[in-house]
Amino acid sequence: MPAPASYDAVIVGGGHNGLTAAAYLARAGRRVLVLERLAVTGGAAVSARPFPGVDARLSRYSYLVSLLPRKIVDDLGLRFAVRERSVSSYTPTERGGRATGLLVGGGRARTRASFERLTGDGREHTAWEEFQALTGRVARRVFPTLTEPLPTRAELRRRIDDDTAWRALFEEPIGAAVEERFHDDLVRGVVLTDALIGTFADAHDPSLRQNACFLYHVIGGGTGDWNVPVGGMGALTDALAHAARAAGAEIRTGHEVTRITPGTRAAEVEFRTGTGDDMGTGTGRVGARHVLVNASPEALAALLDEEPPEPAEGAQFKVNMLLTRLPRLRDTTVDPREAFAGTFHVAEGYDALATAYAEAAAGSVPSAPPSEIYCHSLTDPTILAPDLVRRGYQTLTLFGLHTPTRLFRADNAATRAEVLAATLAQLDAHLAEPLADCLATDADGRPCVEARTPLDLEADLRLPGGNIFHRDLAFPYAREGIGRWGVETAHEPVLLCGAGAVRGGGVSGVPGHNAAMAVLERPA
Image (cartoon, rainbow, N blue to C red; front, side, top):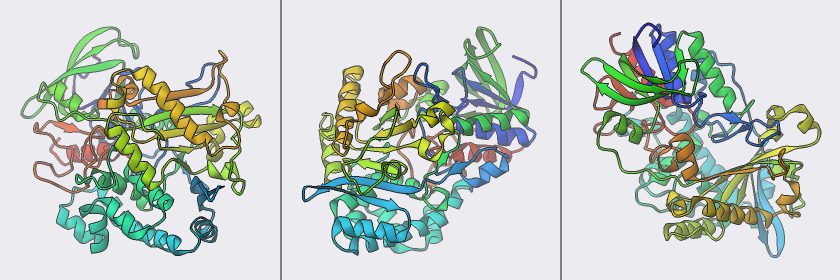
């Protein structure tokens, strides 16, 4: 290793949270070393060109930004921007033998008119606005706490200061709130989907893990808006790596940490090298006052040679596509450029979501797999080469729900193909032409479609069970055995700064920020 051989902080993993921690600590004058197993930094927040011979740089895994606090962008001086989507969502359906849908966006009057066309009157829209106001109040009061020391449950409840909201989001299964406020099946489903992103649960699951998922999906930025990263998700992690290096942090790719041996006041980190940069092939070790682990709780337990936590399970199906043009819709009242600019919901009615969950829980691929789709290039065409933009090419990102890891264990490849075909068939049901007619082809003549199952994500990124949150999300308040910042472990020098920390999950940088703050509060 280059001198010095001992650091103030060694960060295990160069995902966006590890890079965030590295940048904060290096800017505070600490000696920081980042060890990343892969040949590039970024973890799940990367951009890539997945289709041979096609200059389209897609956000390969994570793809939208909501939970990243502006504070982190400003503190670190990141050259990174997001853009708002022109439409929030469009959900196609059929009513009375007629293709129609629900468009949310384009102004209050237009949204209300869409609700009225779908449901026959304005009552569902009024309920929608009232529920949006409720979640908005919670968002404005909870989001700022994510980069503060953990409040207690009682403190967070006092801060929210709304008993109705507290009961709906923190105490009763979210299904109760949805069913109490809304009556249209499609509207109920659109509301519920925020509780099921990467979370395999029923609306009435008594564990309330769906409520925690819902909370994180509606509080981002204090507004709940989900924005498009300009230049793709890799633009964020590139900016974070630049900020860390500019502040003096060392980042070594191709360095896989194999063991952490904690002491009372410091720890030793063992690693092996091979694929990343000019460090050669071999093994090594380095000392550190603090070790920040930007990996899953399962990985942390393995590095410490401790009993692992309960196995995690993912529940999502990710598909990246490149089209020569957007497909025409059966609902001719909506322009595809608007319908796909926001979140395009497929097979996500309330009853359909319950059926898909029940089928998957019983071990079967859902007969109508639910999914959410959006087109990055409508909001940010910079991810495509100018020639592709001129020719009208567009991207589609699909995120499937209720496809838990267990479905893929027996035969990942065959089940991947089955789920892909069934999912795209659900989309085709709302199109005036087959999606296959719109797909671009790569240099080898193959359709530009890349599908990733939870097992693929486990293999690619070591996400435990393919779980994008590393484990079930937790409500953002303190509980017994959890430290001041939600990142502490049983070993004083070792902190968890990945998505499995309290207030982890999503592309936020929050666990990285909080781990850095925990270090900076301690004596150097």
